[in-house]
Image 1 (cartoon, rainbow, N blue to C red):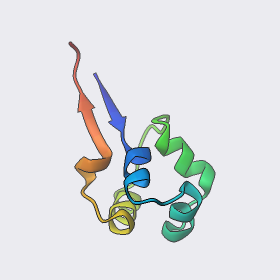
Image 2 (cartoon, helix red, strand yellow; image 1 turned 90 degrees about the horizontal axis):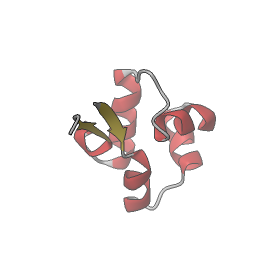
Image 3 (tube, rainbow, N blue to C red; image 1 turned 90 degrees about the vertical axis):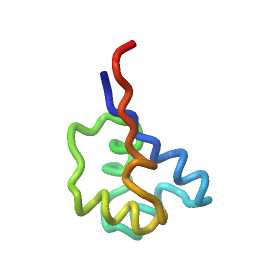
Length: 69
């Protein structure tokens, strides 16, 4: 089981770069990259809220649960 991060999909849909989003929500591009690649161990609700606000989406648009098959 794992959590899939679809941040790159939402960025593409909104035609926004990682750098632009990072600047708008106040985190470094390196930290956003860690989130985007799914290597993050956690995400703060305030960061998730800021991402959703800027991308005009729901948390479920960014995070997906994939169970074992």
